Length: 288
Image (tube, rainbow, N blue to C red; front, side, top):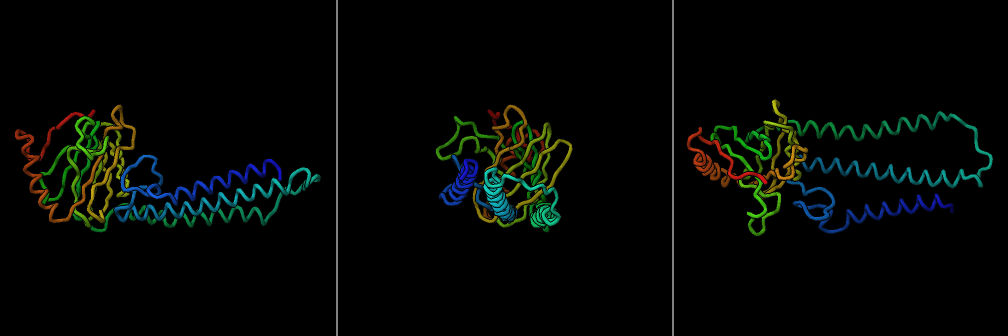
């Protein structure tokens, strides 16, 4: 076997080993939160993220099959048409069947990819029914939230990262905030995302949410959290010197607990700034 053929086979074997290792190693294929040296996506906690993972897996199978096919084809060509095996190369310049095949097959592959892609885009666009609406505004460098429904009227607050030297035991560095976005489990939450200064990005991996916060524009998305828990995200649009210190946290709780939190939040955030209209909150601390 020629050196080139052995090299191609070695690369193909290494690729397969890495692929199997990424899928088989416990604790690395999926993670409920960011972990050191983690592989794969965070565990899905919403229907949108579940569909995103399904599309991801489909694309992984397709690209793996294409990669293996191309690798084997290249190994075959290197061996079959080497100079010592083929001293008089063919002068054929066209092959109608081959040209039709390498045009039609990629088109069919793209159709297979396009159908679930369009379905996912449509599903992400708007929730069929909305139980809760929250306006999310990006600032340099923190988030602010405003509950838009009458039942939560007056709940408006800012959410800033907790500095490292103020973290309590068990809290996560660069991910914890002073005020979390609290939502009820099992309810469709509509997000209206905008910005005040530069372009930010509201990104919650476990919920399948990513929307740009663009000044002067309001973009819409939604999610529904399937189980109680705390979910972490960060701005993933480079938005300035403190871009890395702009986390977002969503806490999903049962509906009864959410209703109790709303009543407490109306008092809590109104007390923060008595000279302003109810619900307006001043910054609690400067982001580092």
